[in-house]
Amino acid sequence: MKLKNDNLMKLLTSDLEPKISIILPIHPETPQAESNLLTYKNLLKDVKKDLEYNYPRRDWNHAVEKLDALTLDRKLWNNAKKALLIFANNESMEICEMEHTVLAKEHVGSTFLVQDLLLPEENMQRPDYLLNISRDRINIFDIDSLKEVELAGMYTKFSDYYSDFDANSNLNSGSYGGLNATYHGHRSKAEEQQKDQTIYYQYLDKKLSELHHELGYTFVLTGLPETLDVYLNSYENSSYIGGIIRGSIANLTHAELSERVNEFFAFERAAGIEKVKHDVQVASQKNRVVNDLNIIDFALNNRDVKSLVSFNDGSSYSVEHNKLLIKSLMNKINCRVLYTQDDNRYPSMNAILY
Image 1 (cartoon, one colour):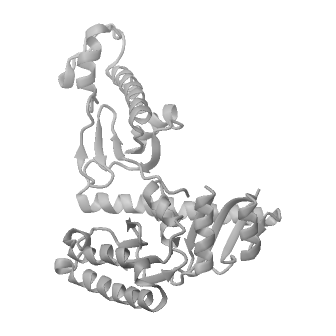
Image 2 (image 1 turned 120 degrees about the vertical axis):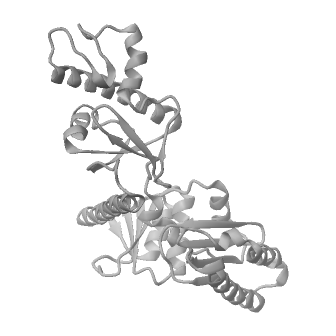
Image 3 (image 1 turned 180 degrees about the vertical axis):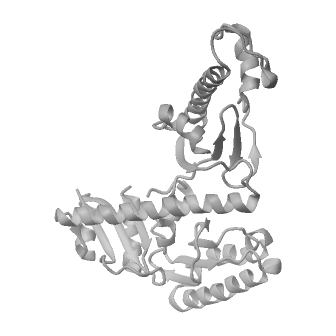
């Protein structure tokens, strides 16, 4: 995993100490977010004690000013995410919103606690839209709000596309009359519908490819198997496809759609975790894995590490482990953290060597 936030990366790799980490669970259902704010104030109180006891005031006074100011940010404490990670030193502060639950924790010292940034659920490539495919139309939903949307310039019905397309075309030997179509020529109605489906799917592939190339959009494709499979038979390897959900979502309630999407991401996350475990196992069988922290540190300095994987139960934050994770980020080495509460088969830190 490589952090995309340049300001966060600059802060995490700064040499300026003390480095302050506040890890905070968020409960969006709490009225007026008083519980979230109270938890933060208690953690901040502990931070101030650590700073006053261990560091001169001039080394942290600006950081504490910024942290104190957060108590007035009502929007922050009504956050819809599950957790906040707050990192600060005397020069800068960054706030990260997380999708997973955490235990309340603060730390002051020579490193930031970054492992919660590196979990699979925080680094999945989330598609932008759900696209439900029918024979002659599509429904598009925003992946975050789950609200149906329209994309500019995109025909969501074949009949709309055909009216423009047919103005300069003569694909059929007969005529097309919309919903109450009359068909002439040598093909049956079923053949006409299949031809229309092929034409519309060609258009969809072209348009989705353009959106992916120009705007970076990716889509989870959904639909009844009898229509979705027809599309995938021709376009399954397209780069704009960010996942597949078999079954139509067009008539689901918001709650049902939310459950379906959560199931999709849970499956993707589980598949990603199993792949990481498999990578460690395969590398270990080839004697390409080291677990000693000092050797890992040496290998990182020597640019011998292909990727770094940390396994723990999610309740502990090893300072030495976090230093290695940050060094991996600095060296642009892929590093991942897996919380495996019920799986003790793996050493806590694994460096996969080239």
